[in-house]
Image 1 (cartoon, chains in turn purple, orange):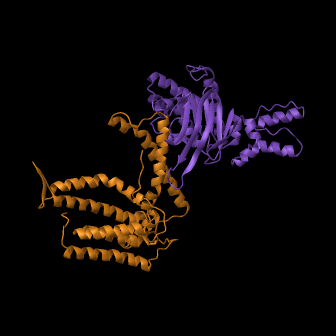
Image 2 (image 1 turned 90 degrees about the vertical axis):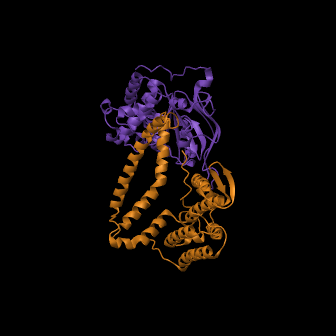
Image 3 (image 1 turned 180 degrees about the vertical axis):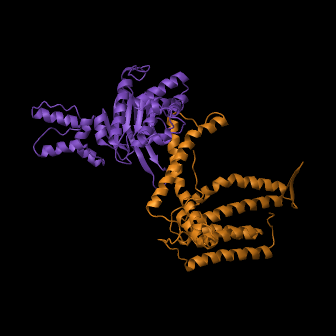
Amino acid sequence: MVRAEGRATPENKNGNENEYIAEFRDVTFVYNKGVTYETKAVDSVNLKIRRGLITGIIGATGSGKSTLIQMLNGLIKPDSGEVLIDSENILSKDVKLKKIRFKVGLVMQYPEYQLFDETVESDIAFGPRNMGLSEEEIKRRVESGARFAGLDFSLLKKSPFDLSGGQKRRAAIAGVMAMEPELLVLDEPAAGLDPAARREILGKIRDYRKERGTSVVMVSHSMEDMARYCDRIVVMNQGRVCMDDTPPKVFGSSEELFSAGLDVPGITKVAYELQKLGIDIGRDIYTVKYAADMLCEKYGLKASAENF
Amino acid sequence: MNFDIAFGQYCEGNSILHRLDPRAKIISALIFIVDIFIAKSVWAFLLLTVFSLMTAAASRIKARVILKGLRPIIFIMVFTGIVNIFWFKGERLLVDFWFIHIYLEGIINALLIMLRVILLLMGTSVILTYTTTPLSLTDGLEQLLSPLSKIKVPVHEFSLMMTIALRFIPTLVEETTKIMNAQKARGADFSEGSLVKRAKALVPILVPLFASAIRRADELAVAMECRCYRGGVGKTKMNVLKASLSDAACVLVFILLGVAVVLINKFASGFRIGI
């Protein structure tokens, strides 16, 4: 596969500083300011998003995840603090937000409700067309977007309103992927889909990152999905970041997760119970495959856990 | 986009006005409108103003909210006021320049017209919309109009439509914001370019908005069918409206206000409004 222009690779313009694609500096956002029920949706958050990785953001409902990621492309402006994309403060006056929005592709929750055009093809082309690209380039991007999102080419000529729910979701994600952003941000990309469609879409996102080297930020409620697909996990609790670490570390500290109103993946619970029964395979179990490997190792078996 | 719709919004509270029967409030508001339009004398206006301020105070709604509600009509008010200044012929000429003649009476008249608009909006919103939930408002309206169903007017259906429309305003506002944000994330621009370009930029918002409104209507219809909704025939109510003495008193107060206005019009001297 040809990596398009290779612009999403870590080229390291200035050495270290580019290790992070995005950064929040002491960001605070208050909803309903000045009214009696004012709430701090995001409370002095400091967070760095690593380039080239899939970062998962988890948190209970109302913990500020969605607000936080909508700040990444300036849809929501923080009341205080700085948001940096590629070491550039996107809130400063001389930054054009439109440019930032092409750099940071945001897929909102339930994106299928934003489809509007006559054909799926022209809907996917909406973003690239706004970028002012040539028709040839738009065509190429529509196709690559559709391919990355796992959308069958035969659907491109159809009306988006004739697609099934899962196909609509894919078309909407393709519309953002076709913009070839450097940072792809997805709010609950798999919410409301059946397990097969879930796996497929999340798998496609992982493939997309692998092939294009795009950095990905993903919000989800599903601990299993996060454990499976993310390289790093950020845990939010009441507007604050309370953990930012690798999946084993995060899922290994269940007390913190429970106090944030979250849960651990089912398999982690299984590992706990096994530990209670005297079968200790560690507490940092978070995928079925890893658990199977550890168990095999413990008992000296050579079974293959490929199927997980 | 600014979705500031303070006028017509319910403000929670537990004042006398909040507790009154919606039917009494609807009737009172109608009488109040009549009171305002029959007022001619300056003194009648003074009485109405004092009365409106007292009602506003009784409703315990913050002055800030009421003032905010008046904001959308400032332009119309000032416009009608200014137009009236030029058209009114009186006795004391203040400005006489070319074709412009401004009389003192013209200015007073314009001020009274503006006051009338303010009282109209403030009075009705304080009596009705600020202090009555949309639901009890439509409930009251349905009850008041129910005699019309004898002559085959679908009163229940009308009130249901109104309830649903009111219920979905905030939902649709929220939906619009969401869709706009989604399209902005894809580089849509609603504030740049020619008028045609801007109108075209609305398509990516309107199409999904209509689609979702139709989807919601469909879902609502199914939900209603599931709960065996069969129209208004034989339907009983959970909250039966009961008029009390204070409701009758409220209506009476507004009628007396009208009588007072008529009497002042007849006997008081001083300036009278032209239109």
